[in-house]
Length: 199
Ligand code: IMP
Image 1 (cartoon, rainbow, N blue to C red):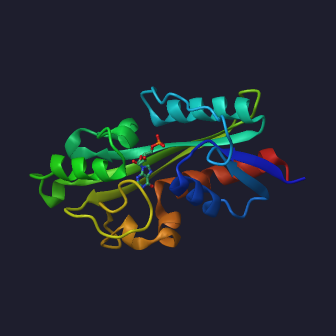
Image 2 (cartoon, protein in one colour):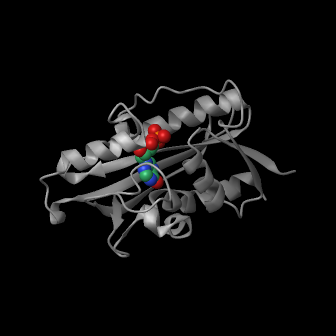
């Protein structure tokens, strides 16, 4: 029997990335964008790990199935690690307003000091509340001076990957899903999940 795993997110960009990175698992993915009444867990933790655990456990209890939650965000060194766990709601607006704020806050910061990283903490929980597996991943980069590219979501048009000299939004999903924080966390999660699936 193919197991269903719920993705505790309504973010279509994030959902598509998880599905693509774990496409080789014998699993059917559904997400909280597909069902009515899924919990909107308050992300009030002080770490990605805390928020991801909370989302996964609440999601699994609601869905009655294994549930995967990703809590992720951007840490900018010149901003003391902000926006961090507040990445999605940082400006009070959506992705566009967040990117405007990032450009404004870094206006006077020269290129060598524009270092940043994406971090993701990913948890799979079962309906009992037991954590089946969890892992983290990071991806180092630099914040650009203007938006470039249209792929991905969130801060991707400003997040330059030094090895490629391009933003995540220019690199496209195939490359992003090999090098991103989310890809690294999910790659680390694959083996324990397969073991727990018993397939
Ligand atoms: P979460 O849904 O609370 O985990 O918020 C994640 C937020 O972090 C997103 O809304 C984005 O602002 C940012 N973020 C996380 N991962 C990425 C990514 O892969 N690309 C761009 N922004 C990201």
